[in-house]
Structures are given as C-alpha cells and as structure tokens.
Amino acid sequence: MPKFQQPKPSQRPAWLLNGQNLKMAQSAHAYVRGNTAKFYEWLENAKGTVPDGPAIWICGDCHIGNLGPVANAEGQVEIGIRDLDQTVIGNPAHDLIRLGLSLATAARGSDLPGVTTALMLEQMVKGYTSALQANGKKKPLHGDGLKPVQLVMKEALNRKWRHLAQERIEDVQPTIPLGPKFWALTKQEREEIHRLFQADEVGSLITCLRARGKDDAIEVLDAAYWMKGCSSLGRLRYAVLLGVNKLYCLIDIKEAVQARAPGYDSADIPRNHADRVVAGARALTPFLGERIAGS
Image (tube, rainbow, N blue to C red):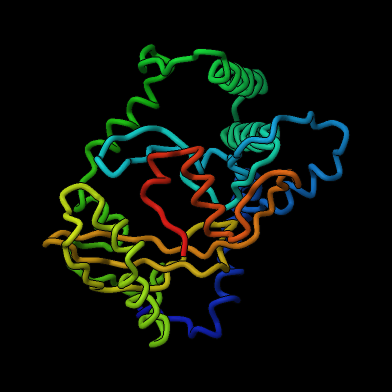
C-alpha cells in the first residue's frame, strides 16, 4: 500500500472539512449527528412549537452517538453522556428533540417500520419522565429489553489498556503511529503539549486515576494531531500518550469553543468555554466530569 501523505498544518482545515462532509454524506442519521448548527437553525424556525423548560444543565448535542459507557477514576462504569462540547444551562426540551431526531433517523436508516420509531420515542419520553420523579432511585438493570445495555456495560468493564491501544494506536508500544487519523505535530504544538502536562492542575488530574500516586512523575511519550469526531472536526484535537508509574495513559485534548446550543440569558454559565464544558460534565456525567479539566 502507498504510504499515507501527512497534511501540512496549513492544509489541515481543508482536510478536516472534507472529512466532515464525507462523514455526513453517509446517511441522514450521520448528517443530523454531524450538523449541530443546522439543528438549532431548525429549532429557531420552529419558534412557538418548542415548550419552555426549567433552566438546567443540558447536553446541547444529545444524539445517540454521544451516549455510552463512561468510567470514573476508580474504574466503575455507568451509561451516560460522553460529549459535553455543547453543554449549557438551557431548555431540556432541546435535548429530548435532539435525541428523538437522532433515534428517528437511525431507525429510518435501518429500514425499521414507523411503528418501531414511535415506540422508541415513547420509551425515551417515559424514561426521561421516570428519572424526574420525586425521590426516584436508580433501578438495577434487568429484563430482556435491557440486554443491549447490559452487553455494552459488560464489554466496557472488560476493556483493558491493550484493547484501547489496539483500537486507537494499533499496538501496545509507547508511540502513536502516524496515518489517516493521527497527524504529525509542529515543533510549537509539541512544546505546548509538554508544557501543559507540567501544570499542577493537569498533573493532579492524571495522577488521581486508579493505580497512580499523586507524586508520580508524568512523562509525555508521544503526541499527534487527532482527526476524530464529526461536528467538532476543524477544532484543535490531540492524542497524547503519557507514561505514569510504568503505566500508559491516553489523553484526549480538545479545543472548547462557543456552544451552538442556546443557553438561558439569566443562567450563571462560565464565560470560559473550557470551564463551561467541565461544569456541564460534572453536573450531567460526574464519572466523566471528574476525569476532565479545562485550561
């Protein structure tokens, strides 16, 4: 096979835009998933039909691709929201409509009958209503209808470092192989990443993870520009491989920008976009929130 030609830093925007367009062209579901801005344009044009809701933290981009297993620092796993780029204190109806549209387009792309789509949306609303009930308690997973969730949970609990390495960096060696998904960094980018992991806040985040001590030294083993995501393609994103106490750690660095999701004007939302994402994550998905930091 011919060797992949790495894009130059000046070529990245065009490559990322092309990659985003190719992803969204795969299906109606992929288009909806990758076009958060267009979704909120549709809602803006539907003013008067969307009910007002209480001012609470919402995902802002609640499609099915952003739901899945999330582990905390102790290795426990829950199903939760895994992407909070768009999180704001806003109208929860936006999350329900976004998720409902995502489910409907996924069902359509799978040639499922309309009645199945209706049942899926009905269960979504029932689940949301149940979670809001006073004195509601988490119920253990059981029943045939929850077998897919149980399977995802089991797979997540059984994942080890070698599985992550095989999926993300192709082998278990302490390097990130460059290719279609991982691109070479400039000298300045590499220096900034090394400087970032010298900061106390970031260092304490890394060493709080299981099997690491707060005084353990952190070594940046390798780093690369990461072509990952869909609606977020075009923002700065890096994969960083760390060595901590003879263990490896893969860190995802992602640029935080202004949310497309509309927040309530009266809400106390952090002005710094990175702080906003962290605050939203800690409110909506604590397992994820405790493992991320803004800078």
